[in-house]
Amino acid sequence: MQQNNGKALKGKRVAVLMTDGVEQIEVTSPRSFLQEHGATVTLISPKAKGDKVQGFNHADKGDSFEVDMQVGQASPSDFDALLLPGGVSNPDALRLDKASIDFIRAFGAEEKPIAAICHGPWTLIDAGIARAKHMTSWPSLQNDLRNAGAEWSDEEVVIDGRLVTSRKPDDLPAFNQAFLKLLAIDPGTADRGPSS
Image (tube, rainbow, N blue to C red; front, side, top):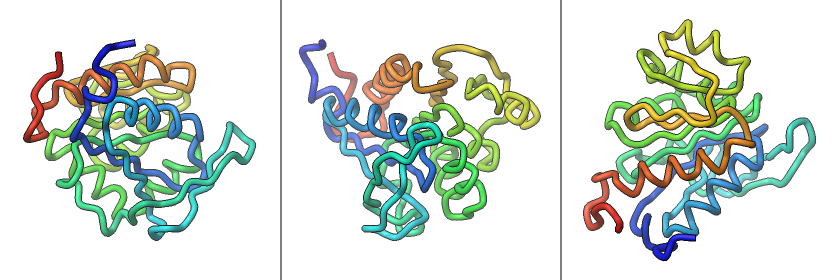
């Protein structure tokens, strides 16, 4: 473990955008990892603050997560980065929610780090962020992403500028490390430079 645990991401604020059907481990693993390194993680959803989002372990119901902030009330300018977990029905529902797509689009427009895993990259198509990006995802999304103008490859983790993508829960260790690296060097936070 690094000696600077708890400090590398101090002052960083990460939004996690999700709704019912989210793949549980794709929330809990990055959230714990980011918090261990000092980041503040906020769960954002089309649902109202205090409502519950139902997580899943593949096809089986998992835990529920309390919403910290409704997406319509959330300002991308208050966050340094965005995490988009997967699960099939989670991004499928988010794609139909204008406020969610606008929220994602704003992160792309401001060139803030976005990390999307499994089915999470689906929403990047609707937000106009997939075009001309090198990405990976759950294999069933590859044609959708290619049709949207992305270059798709079957890799554990792909980094293209401020965008990090991975394929599945097995990729979480590499995904988390890549997101950490991007956040730790991101100049977006006022009072912290690269950590040493």
